[in-house]
Image (tube, rainbow, N blue to C red; front, side, top):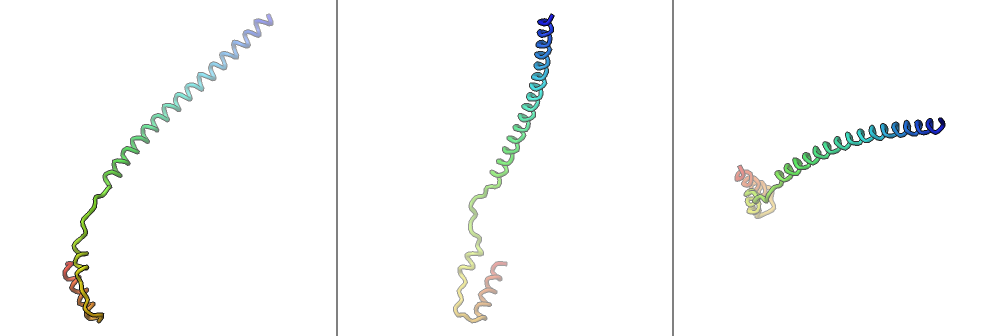
Length: 95
């Protein structure tokens, strides 16, 4: 009778351990599914971000013509009137 009780206790312990491991397996399986979903979401966000960055890349733009006008200004003397006339010519030609 003592052996039967020992076997019964061992079987009950195994059944209990099996149930615990089964529950742990289900929990881990649901965590894996959640992580796979989050991973795919992150990948799609990264792809979208990379496309946006690629669209924002700029190409070299030619210099505006206003810079050329500025390079052509010649001030013959350092008097205020001469500088004022040069700036007036600059602003008149830019509008």
